[in-house]
Length: 242
Image (tube, rainbow, N blue to C red; front, side, top):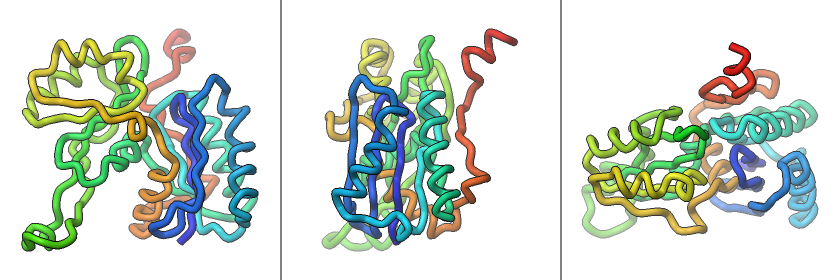
């Protein structure tokens, strides 16, 4: 199965082509340009570099939120446009799930945090648990199941810290919320924790694609016309109008 993956939900813009268990190509930019300037040129350049034909893809996996309102709209519009033009289904990938999935095999709590402003973060709580066939063997390949402990949410940093302290387990943090709220986390956490290294701490389209293939096989996909982002909360303009 071949998937085109797109993620522009945060500060990072990233696209990839994933085929079964192989990443054919991945293009990631974390720089001072808007996603409207970078996303389509990145896809075009990537496709040219690997001489890919987008008509041969089976689906388009897109990070569907939460995240930046503008970034999500750009990513969703790009995915919808390509899906309609190519006649391909879309796989809606929750942003926080894809970020957590990048820490495959970690049995600690995985906590992606994206800055939602005003001392709030978009987050979720995840982990990996060994599959039974792995537990029965002391030697050999370990296999893990992805566990969603708490689905995506928009919460205050204080509330997140309280929840994590209640779980009482070691935590790994990643995401653009880490440098923003690092001091608050260090001050409030009563459990062991660490921060993911730079090559794992931002969105990656290859992970969106890999998770997309898993979800597609489970029947979790939609038409391009059906797709819409999950913002989790209303925009600032809507709040001020209300």
